[in-house]
Image (cartoon, rainbow, N blue to C red; front, side):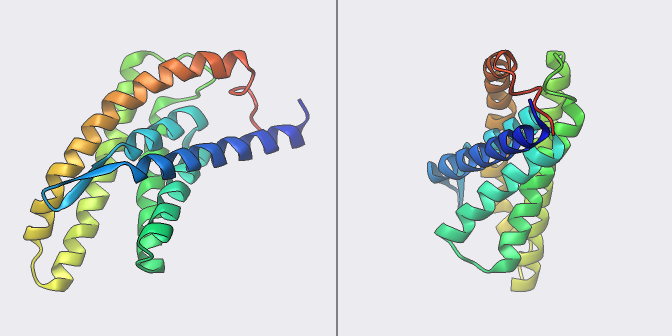
Length: 180
């Protein structure tokens, strides 16, 4: 495969996973002042399948586009969303290693746990800063923490399952070897 073809394929994969993050974020339900959704699992999956930087771009882009189209709370929130989701997938991808090489399940699980908890920490930091600006740091954190932990737990379980289901098919199709 030519380098240009590899770059096109990688760009398509980033776009496809960003679209998956966006769509999965649409399906959410309220819990204690926050929302539970399954987008974090797809963000971790992006890190596992694409690696740190492309996976981070897919996770950050899909989440930021969701915020832009559904909330449009300004450029600062878009950047915060992009950076925090990017960080989640980046950490996961860094710890997991190369998707085109078979990684042991414990390594994948640890990568998902640390990636998901990275996002929870960054989200709680953002929530705390916004709460501090508004004059009450603990109430917003207390209301959003339970849903954040549930999102993280679901992501920690779902992402490795989807990764191990998709990886063999993507490897057989030659997609995981297509690094530009």
